Length: 312
Image (cartoon, rainbow, N blue to C red; front, side, top):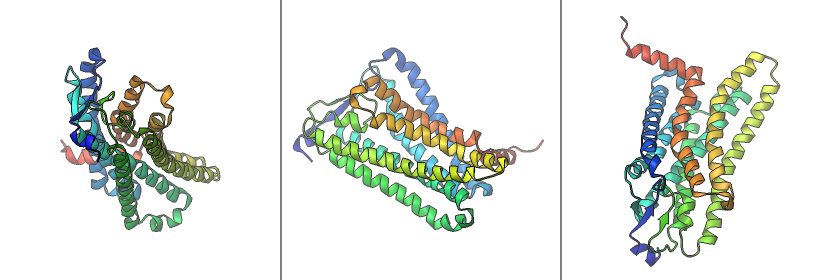
């Protein structure tokens, strides 16, 4: 690590300090969303473990996805709430910034891979139903989850090594509410152009490759659906895939807009709004999507509530 970085005391996260009139309301909104996120994803984990009807590969992946969502938003939100409660920008140490980015990347890439595994699950169930139990037996599912975490760790290690070995000015100011990749990288004082190209290439790759695999899976699913003669069968396939598709569009849509759009067309306010959406809002929406649009989950929830509430 560069000598200058070793003596660098801290970064200054500006957060939303330029929007002081909105800091109070935004604090309560973010806090409410965070609590709903914790409750919703914890409920998904509990349901998929407690209900025998949800002991299938799809819900095994969903349980791990919910765990990732809890960790993902917890990496960002508590620090953001503390910043929103302060009238002035707060500093974050060089080591803490690096750690936050590292964990953020691990969880973000792991979520990409888990969403891809869930798409493969739907493809196997619909396009190869006779081989489904063989293709997605317990060990295969565990391997997919392990690979998801491994890809996250490899990507985070690569990105962090490229970014935090650069030289930074003596008082780097980050116009963001957490240590995201591009805002931190753009504060590097030397060698940032080559590193930015490398980091962006890797980021786009790890966004587009999983997304391409998901598109491939759903293209084949669509072909299988069009070959069905029964309207009822088509509706059943659509209902089993709609929740996952909506979750994919939310996650990859905001990530693509954030990391792939040209820098010339971006602004600090737009970047923060987009980041707030995919780090705070999306983790809250996923359990809602899977609860409201999934009959198996809603049925399991009703049964669990009946067992918890004593009969009169």
